[in-house]
Image 1 (cartoon, helix red, strand yellow):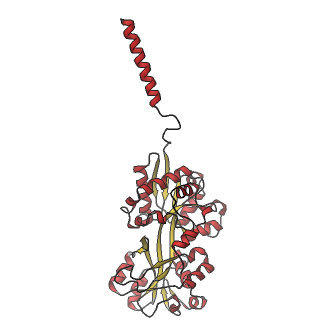
Image 2 (image 1 turned 180 degrees about the vertical axis):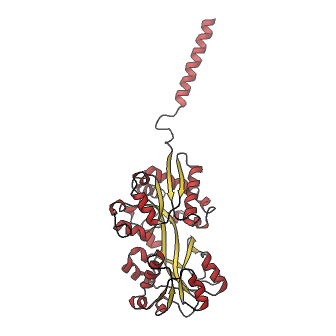
Image 3 (image 1 turned 45 degrees about the horizontal axis):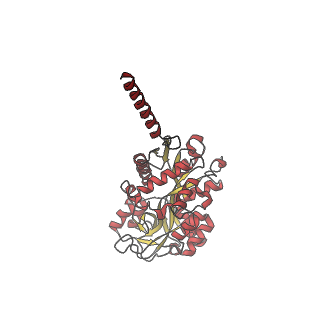
Amino acid sequence: MRKLALSAFVTACVLALAAAWLAAPCPSQAAPKVYRVEARTTTFGGSSYILGFGMCDIINKHSSWVRGSVLESSGTPENVKIVGMSPGKRSRTFFTCSAEMYEKAKKGEAPFNQDSSKFKDLMIMSYQQSLAVSIITLDPKIKTLADLKGKRVATWPKGTTKFAMTYNLIGGAGKEVLDSIKWQYTAYAGYNDMILGKTDAALAFCPERGNDVYTTVPKLKELMSKRDVYFITATPAMRKLSGKLYGDMYGATATLKKGVLGNGVPRQNVLCFNIVLAWAVYPEMPADVVYEILKVTTEYAKDLKTYHSSGKGWIPEKFGAYPAPKKDWHPGAVKFYQEHKIPFGLEYFNKLYPSE
């Protein structure tokens, strides 16, 4: 009787072990080892930083094997250089990258002309956000950039990216107009100077919040609460000339449609310089990691706008909206976009943001 009971016990143990072995996942079924990434952005508190935090938070909540953390930086040049020169960071970092700096890195131009080979293999993962850059005035007679001939224009000091934006935008109106400009390096103080009659026009930014939907930055919103503000448009020919003179990225165009800002503002369709930011990576970032980041953040795309309103632009129609040829997109991103039939690349960008 004891032998029978012992035999039954042993049989039960063997069956239990067999069942456990069969239930255990084989190596090919096991969850991947946790992979930690960093999102390098811009200044703490800015929209890029907040979007990076949101991306990482969504990844941490919903990916079973990728974990992310956000870091601040001074902007694109720092991101491209620090990540590009560190083998460890190249394989674990996605970062904010403006289109004009992307182009300079690919060409090995300043500020990337030293150790340029470390930056030329820069790749794109996805669109991040965009802003329309234009010139504004309180003078209703100034309608196009050509009307700025001989005028006083407020911008940022020489050597800054904001001065380059202003100069290259107006440069599309031709040398005669550009050479006649009376520059005032007063930054946002130029807005109050327009009220006081000390300047005629100034640089302005309008962040995009979705397809053809724009809003104002706080300084512009404040000015518009005090005065009627008129947006000065470029013409298609001017935008094309800016691209020819200063590089394709400076020819990138966004259109503020008539009335998009409310109360009939702007009074006309306004062709602007389109600042486009991407999430960039280097080739060492594993393709399956890039794919996982895009997969998870796409599944929970609606949540990104809860971190910052510019997250409303995180929609499939925008993922591939960056002026980089398809060969410069990361293989993990290409796989995701092709599987989900999401358009991407330079031709798609030009279709989405035509210069006409």
